[in-house]
Length: 255
Ligand SMILES: [Mg+2]
Picture 1 (tube, rainbow, N blue to C red):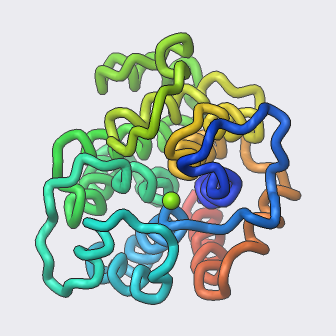
Picture 2: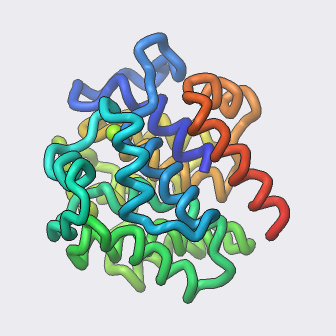
């Protein structure tokens, strides 16, 4: 999960700007955690405490109201009992990383990925995208290679993950179906964690979310270097850091 958080923080300062040059500074003073991190930690918390996904997400958003949420999601989060609003946006896959680490098997991964998505993002594309990211993390965690997972995800989900297609970049795409293939391809093609996140950020567009998802999956392939973990943790508030610590302890205990 720290891979998702670090990716979000690194990508945060480029969101909506032109793609940066390849050698950009990873942790710049303008970096901050955004909605991707808040919602990722909320989903982890809900799973670990067997809490309700909607109620937990709402509590986190209200504690961190200025993290850069989309307008529809913010309205949903600030309105008790608001129903899911049919979103096909990338909010569902961007917050799913913990599912891939905490679920026991494929069936539980699919169920949790769908459940956390459907409280707000109940469009089929968003649910499927969240499941693909969580299942990729699960498969990698269980020892499959990046090449095996790339082929299997491509066949099963119908995503074109060939780098010459998925890594073309192109505009500001906040759809789940448009965000997940490039983010996955950045991870699958990477030589190390940093390489995955640099590739994702250099695609431009919704850079924090691309880097969040790429960083989440790349963590399951390569791990995250200790100095990057340290820098990312340093950007968090105490409440988020505490849940991250709890997540790391649960993960070690259960696997
Ligand atoms: Mg964001």
